[in-house]
Image 1 (cartoon, chains in turn brown, yellow):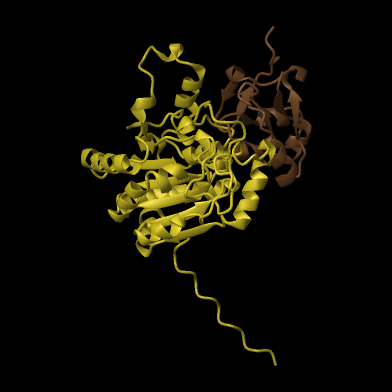
Image 2 (image 1 turned 45 degrees about the horizontal axis):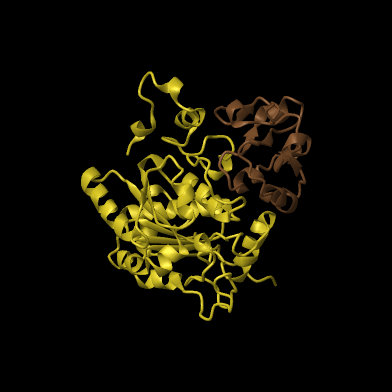
Length: 107
Length: 299
């Protein structure tokens, strides 16, 4: 098993700085969804990770902890995530994306 | 070299991979995207084999977003890590032999001008420090002396990262590397000064820990290269493998290096300033309004 980044919607949607989306070295890996936060009653949307693309470098963790001072991202073993976003289940919209969360581990 | 080249032939949509469909329908082609919208649109860069946490990848990702017209852009590269990512984008990529990327780009840029006339087609060279300052040095400098109208971007990781860690001309003095165990004995080459002497219209240094600055610098360089002359960007893109930087500390290292030897600098000729202001509506080069007259001294 290996580590991937996991973003806490509760913490992220309270501030929604989007810094991690700008600092991830992988394209379209940390995405942003309005629905993920607002639909649950939070003020803003939240960032989330397409775990099939995450290489586990943890740069987003440093950015979230030290630049944004938000501490919303943790590295977690992929089989410890009950549900996560995968590229196949992500739909792009005009200004945001939506993701159907599924179990990231096959079988 | 137009919006049509990314579109599907009719009837083939359903056979295309999801990533491709997303890119055609929600990619940056034909519209303006910016760094602040990252995470909300499909980027032209796809998955690639670069190392986890590589700052060069981040810079390339930002550069691809910053191109003013990605559908009218061709990238040129050479051997080195960068081409592993640059070639995985929906932007045509030409792979030069080691060191001749600026020669290839010169011909390409001239040919595009002959073929398309006034319609701007951008050529952007992205090569490593070895490809630009060592092995390709002669062709790089000559393309600048000839004032070839394209952008040269140096992805400066201060080492030959792809071949095991030999020192390059851009390695810092004293740096100890796997294949330079005694430490480098000479100073880091001053390519910025050379670019200015060779007549580049725009020269800038950036570090990828400021995405908005990277975007603005690349936009300016590509636009100026359309008509005014050569432009050069030198970007610090650390090699976390050869310099043994933990991947989660890559941005911290970038910040330290920025404070140490990679402070942001921008050199722009008056002609380029005038071009950006008149043609593309840039306001930052307009003369500052005169300061209000100081009030009478208080009695």
